[in-house]
Length: 227
Length: 223
Image (cartoon, rainbow over all chains, first blue to last red; front, top):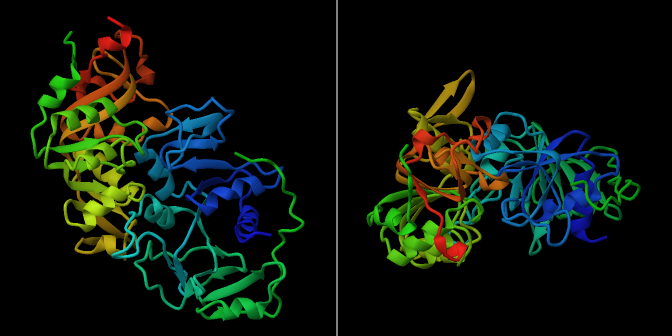
């Protein structure tokens, strides 16, 4: 299984029926295709729509209906269009159940850095700081390492996105839950050992006696897209 | 009843070099494209632009970036416009990055007569540098000042000749808050319809805040 697919499948298991969810650009956008068939999730796009879906068909794009990257999308029946103040009111106000974002670094305190590499890459934070500060649950979906180096560190070296502790980290190797005590190894990916995860992680991991394998093989997937 | 519709050329002639502009849109969706083209054609310089993002090169607000008309930028995201990044790093343009939700609320505060916003967003990060904080009911907040501009350039789906605006889907974005937060508000609707066609419940921006409408180009109708 491709790394990205492992991550997207595992994140999909976190989305529950009826959740209002915001997906960041990149890897998180792969999640909907792996949602269990019976799960109905509502996607918010911060540029102004609740109930984002795929474009209904070729040639049926609406130039006024796009995702946060400017790509054409569709909307489910019953979708709602909102302005930016309302959109971020939902995000900060505790109305958004889950945000799934990419990450550059996460540390032992569960703090995320994902918006700037000073002097090199300054894209801007967009909605990331509001999403991490305000969503009920923050799920970081990212590759475990970059160029062989751990992205899960003792202390973030890059500027933080928020001081808030994220809820869950999902990588192609493991599921890790930041807690007050530190980072707890919750699951390993199929075919990956606890030792491999520990070796690939700079941060100290709390390893329980029993670490189950991600239940992604048996997950009932296959719906083209929930959205 | 006053007819607020004027030509795009005349609208842009009102905007002097060095003006501060709020420009609606999100990656060019819901941006006033005809006004942007006319700003480039008339070559307005040293602009301060407050907007969500700088679009892409050759698209949306990216056209103002290409023409190097922006001296100061306040935005939440420039990542999809490498030319903006280049101008920032080269010191040709001064860029202030603001979290998207904070940007929306600062503009809303500016338009609604509020002295600023208390937000948890950015607390403890680079964004908080040099800013006051306040503890309210045990939670920490940043004090973010209101934002206003000389002109708001907004796009709408429809307007009537009074200036009531109706938006479409994700083209709404920042246009609603910006239409409240500038000394002069110029709206570029896709269609101008007779007064009464937009029902009161469908009006998202009420007419008193809109000063001018960009009239429909006759060229589009072959006359």
